[in-house]
Image (cartoon, rainbow, N blue to C red; front, side, top):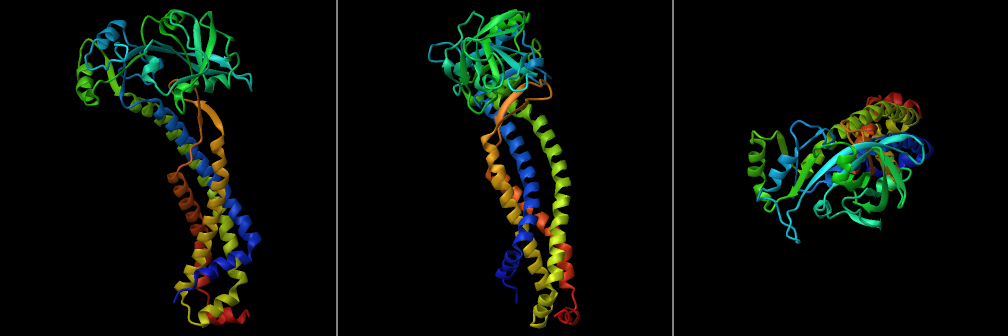
Length: 389
């Protein structure tokens, strides 16, 4: 015979103030736990969404990011001639040779400088990124010092509005448009003509070559052919995999740091739950004695008190998740990778997996915090407990 679920719920409801205070302590821990996961997931999703499965990116073998990569012009021309590259509606091959460099811009809110990616693009760059659209102004003209700015940069940095002038690489660049690339890393970049960028930064080489495959199934053979060519020291990756690898180091760092902080906080929350449950046991000695006298066994008492602590943790988890869900309305910026330390704007992402992990974590906190008090309650002697009546 088991003690009804309503018994545990009613006891928590009777001690509403204590229950709420303990649950709020757990809610704070769950809020931090969920926020860390949402931060890492949003960061990783933004970079992964930057790439396309149909696109292939070629960079220098062993380079950690496009900023450290270089592709010789002769190699880029050879790659451009491959028949596996898809052809666009205008009859030209869907391939772009790009140059990526870093500059320092001043933030609007703090007047501090931060790294921003400048991407030199060619005429097919937009065709390979259909998610990008101009939301204000117009497209930069090839062969000029005009640039377009991602909306993630335009909102954060000075002089990034339309018709403003940016000064870097010992020349002036006119902002003629603002683009939105959705939830991708491109929204945190500035784009200009590749030849103008290479000339300004005195770079006679490209950073990468990106193209779309005519047949997605030809990737493996093409990758083997390019990487085994002794004339080139290049590596070939699907664009989505390339950006996924870019996000892994930072996402892992955030998770480890966040989990360390969460574990420290959770110890305090579990101690709070333990104190609450010990107080409940002390105040309900007569109840425990009565339950044992009418036939309930030790394991029934143990289960009832463990259920209370689980409910306590679950309630705290729900409260923490409610507050964590509001983080989805925030746009934050951080370093894109340890290789570039460039700014990346993204949003916190809450999904079903994070909700489940948070509720499991909060329930476990309640279970651990209530375990010893439940053991104490179950081991009470019937006679001693009834004497307290």
